[in-house]
Image (cartoon, rainbow, N blue to C red):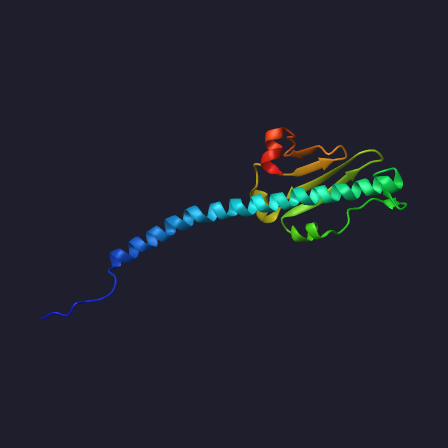
Length: 140
């Protein structure tokens, strides 16, 4: 009389590994897209916060490029620290205008659909240089 064997055959194990591989191949890009979208939303909120800072500078100095007698620099805000390594924030200001930009880098650099986010003194937002309503709705 033969004893009945318990366990998995090699074929069953290979099928399980293949199914897990397929699920992983679908899940990882979806999760990366989710992370990119969330970081982009935080970057948009950070640009709005920095824009409010620039308006306070203008209120006190009547110019965007000078703050308390010194050239205006962006404050070291919490939102910038949160996005350290995935967005670089820059300011381009003169007396009457400014543009704040969040340039993707590192893990976010693969976000080519929206790319660099920007906002100016008039509140005009743009993504990849496009300020159309559809682009803003998708990227901010």
